[in-house]
Image 1 (spheres, rainbow over the protein chains, first blue to last red):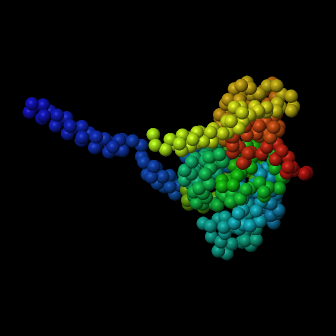
Image 2: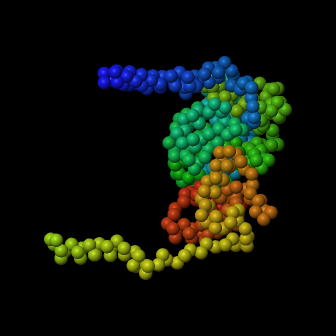
Image 3: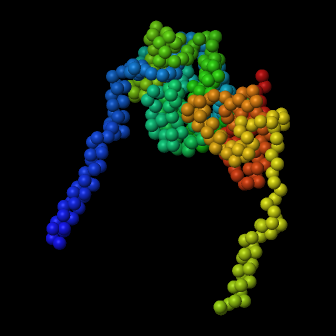
Length: 272
Length: 132
């Protein structure tokens, strides 16, 4: 009897110890936790200049905005905005608070807050810059979305599934570029003409530029690029293809990006 | 049993009231909806009609995930004609009258899908047409 009790206590003790220590073992042997991988990414970005040097694989779409061709030709930016907003049924609100924007104009100081505007040239202060979603390689909006309504596609486009958007606006807090707009009102009342090939959005969802993910498979360029085709101010293409037109431009011209120090690795480049 | 005189008639009144919609409609479920066949005369859908009746909602969800999530925008070919996957781009090309097709059954079954909060029905799309 005594012997049996002794045996039972031994087994019980060993089991309890194993149970208590198991989580620690699992934690030590598994992949690094979420928080530490995030720090690594940030450290990475600190070393690189946001041009994504790490052995690139697959397609990554990007755009170069040649501002030299838009200085003094600001109506070209309006043309691009019009083209985009017509194709995507983007509503127009006069009140800035309710504004929905996929591509828009902003002064240099707002677009490039990390770059000094002290004694900046007259040409950069007099002209607005065209800005849009940066389709970051390390997109903060995707990280904060609780429903995975916004996600990164294999071709690098940061896309949205409006079916899943619950309108929490975490992504708007997460995006350092202000590229996301919230539908406070039913957008349909504020759309002038419908593109029957594209849906509208509904009240209570966030929307943003989709890099014309619906036009690319049809062999078309993004609407803004197509609208400014003659001026060649916007160049769109695969950043990972060394022979693409965009890479030729990037290899030749010095470019800057918006808020590179944040480590979001934007896919939009500016020739200032 | 106490208060038989009030409880039993009370129960009867309750049962009759609760089942009144059935009596009111004369034990019928109302006229069956007759969704309009494609006005263009197309005979073949992407799947057989019976299957579409049952699972069109799942198919739409599949298409949505294909197109949006996986970037798989391969078009669907029916009778030699190509359709891009999508409610507006495939379904409504033939079933061009949402009110006479989708709505007939949805109203009958009291289903309120939120498709049309964002997707444009052909009538809606035509209401604000591009002029140039």
